[in-house]
Length: 217
Image (cartoon, rainbow, N blue to C red):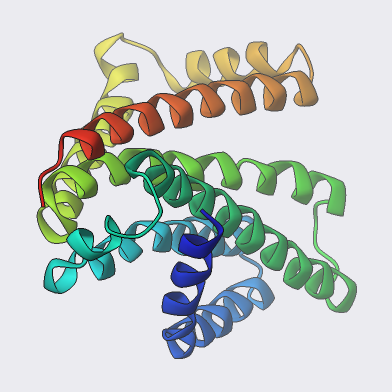
């Protein structure tokens, strides 16, 4: 798996100009005061780059070549999810460093601890994006799989937005529900969220492994 990870890192380094643009845009957003958005922008965008490496692998019948190497299909799938985890954490850490610099240069209304807590939710979001997209890309290919995953994401987002209206909940009800959840404490909520994301990530990995084992090259 180490060899696959090195390969993907080398592939990503070929897009270093794009990463520089992302970094500059994130820094601009940070200094403009959009702290949490900037960290989310970093984390989610960079995390999904783990899915783009599949398109490089399938190019010019690359999968058939990779499977002649001393690597199993399970190891291949595991490496993609591990890469997604590395990119998510690394992008989040970079975003927090930039926000720390911004906070020292230009103090914000919220404390750095509050910023840290709100930004911590971005890592699970990045991992959820990887968990959603990867099975479709492995199954249907990079282009078609990305569109299908995007379509499902839009449907899920629309369902979340419409759910309160469907249930007849007002803004006060929604606020009360959120407050009741966080009444148990911020860290327990973050821990529960981390466990749920881990379970979803693992389920997605198992699905992708099953797809990869049945895939013909």
